[in-house]
Image 1 (spheres, rainbow, N blue to C red):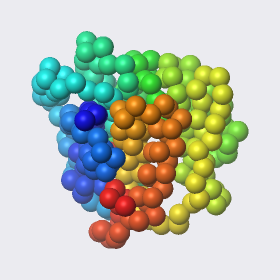
Image 2: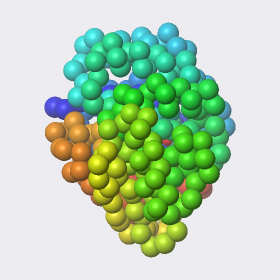
Image 3: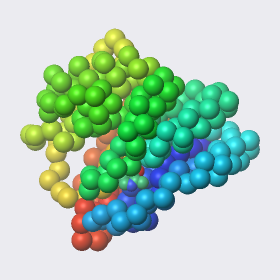
Length: 259
Ligand code: PLP
């Protein structure tokens, strides 16, 4: 059985974060271990409280997992602050992790800050050099680059190229927030661009889309897929999960990971 470790925040509503990661891995037939970096109290409408987990406890979780379980791919999501990122980088280096998917979680759709300013700097300079795949949406790409976004493919290509210089092998700038009938993601591998395309689904059930996509990439890489196949599998999985979302709560509902 292939194994993914997700290092991320908990969503009490079950739609994003660690919970989305575990469900995605399960649906794709991959085992998942989980290190929780922060607790969030949230539902489909809002995040009402955030509590970062104490650093010693995060370290204890990481060491417990790595000292016993062979992990094929690590995925990071919400890392909350600089101290946690430095710790995670230190442990990823110590355990010689080679396959790392970084979902740069910065703010929630509802507007809550999930990574501090200092944390953003640290993510850019210390975590990105270790990444195999980086999966920002357009807003996250702009924040990582310190510029304003433009919602078109030309800007996404430039952003992917410039983000790749921070160190990740492959950058996927996700176009879920583009206008138009297609949701196009731009992939850059250091030499060529490719596009991941799907039709746009008009729904408010999109909570946890970013987490789900990145976890599906991690699970697919763990299964031994080459990166192009892994990205296409993740795109299809996420599209299907949005298409089959069932209504939960009164806000932005979660995806259907079992579709
Ligand atoms: N909560 C946690 C713990 C997350 O990791 C994320 C996103 O990655 C979110 C909330 C935000 O999800 P969304 O913006 O899809 O609502």
